[in-house]
Image (cartoon, rainbow, N blue to C red; front, side, top):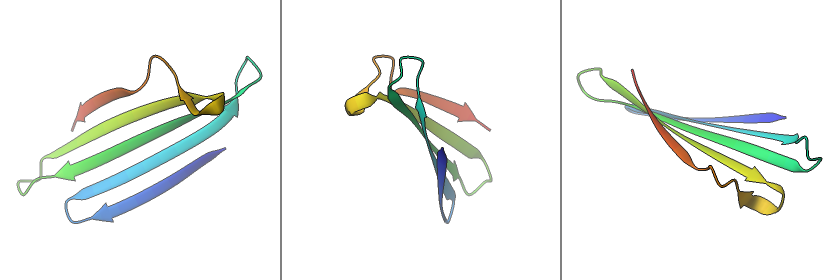
Length: 72
């Protein structure tokens, strides 16, 4: 199941996606992707993406979080 939340304001847009699933280990896991896009007065945009992986009990995966900057 995936839930998507959107928030918009002057010069920015934020999207949060949360997905929950049962892993191959039979335990529940979740992924949260948080993207924030900002636009400067010249029309240039920048998107910052944060991915958070969690396993049962709310513990973060050792490989997480990962911050990825995506130029547009």
